[in-house]
Image (cartoon, rainbow, N blue to C red):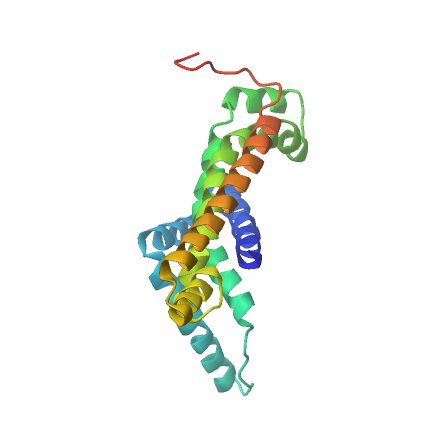
Length: 215
């Protein structure tokens, strides 16, 4: 779970920068973030994990050796966290960008007409309303993040799926161990779903409710 928490924090930081960069940045900034989100979402996550885990450190060490420095060895936990965080950041960027665009433009114009600064406008108008729109998508990305840690097994990282496979292979009790792993993942999902449901209700406090079947 430490990888999931760390990767989610990295992805959230990238997502915030990416969302505001694509909406309010200069032309170069917008193009760079657009390229980043397009590439990450187009390439399979497994390929991205293998590339970021093996190819990028190799290139960095090659540059360091050519510059007269020694090789660096990054901790596997840090590498796994960064890899998943970079992948998650592309999806988080689009979730947050969509949430910001969902804020009624008239309210933003009214706040500017009242003389609100950009910081005050973001704190009082944009942020509270965007969060209520962003939380469902953020919850979905968190659940994906907890499950994507299983992909790190292909690079030999010891996590729940790999440990389950090793234990099942040793004892030959495949059904028992894989069912136990499924139950653990389901418990994590249910607890996370409950947490984000409470968070969404808090974010939507004071907003007009939409009845089932229409407004």
